Length: 393
Image (cartoon, rainbow, N blue to C red; front, top):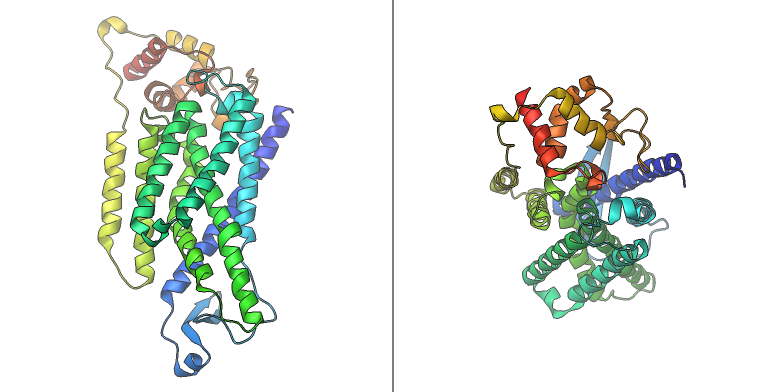
């Protein structure tokens, strides 16, 4: 398949994934807010079996929302279900994952410095991680631990940390992060498909038949909904993580990932409490402090200041850039994967190299994220030379 067609498929799938993700997480945010913001119903509504009500205004219109304690006395003629947002997000995400990491396994998924895998083996590990991860998660949620939410949450965090660490030993750094995101997204979508929707169908069926709904469905759905709610901010970070090599490129990338997941979930907790009228600004303050502390801890060491005897000429630096970078970062790339300069960065001239010197320092000298997968074989000495040239400018 030509690189041009792959780029277009990548663009369209990423666009669809973004749109459907906004729809899914937006609906999740709205309903969590709605459920936590319901007020005591008036006497008339109480007689109808309504447990909470809410008045709001939006786009020039007034809305009156009511939630039944359990179910209405009869089934409405038109009942709106919220499921396709989740399914469409997962489907588009899986197709995007397949296009990037399965079709392009040798370029994006496999890191030969870690494990020289055959593409089909790498793809099998990827699929096994998604399927096996869901099975482990589902079994834990169905175990007696479901009655101990704190213990269950700690075990799930340990499981995610183990997966993140394991994938970082096998796949490229970017692929490892995105696969953790894919696993979390798979569990969230599977929660909707295998637990939440069957529970809602059972509720609707019971109401239609005039029977009392089985509370086990509501309990199971509640557990999974809470998990999905707290995972929204972490999974959003993982969706964009491939743009930030200071996270996935760190030697302890899995630990950095876990720190960010905890910060995201803790931030989400603030908003969950706020919707209930409980304002705890200390949560946001502590999340901000934790973020700053993390940024400080993982900050790359500054390149050593050049000595007088290590003077690097612009021509020497440009020679390295031409040899190691310009196969991708050029107006006419010769790389077998990138047919357009990534991020629009072109390094065909000394002037362009000087223009992008700060980016070279961040992505090549400090984080070693570039060249991509180091496919051109840039040496540590060449990185030091580039760093010295930049410091001497």
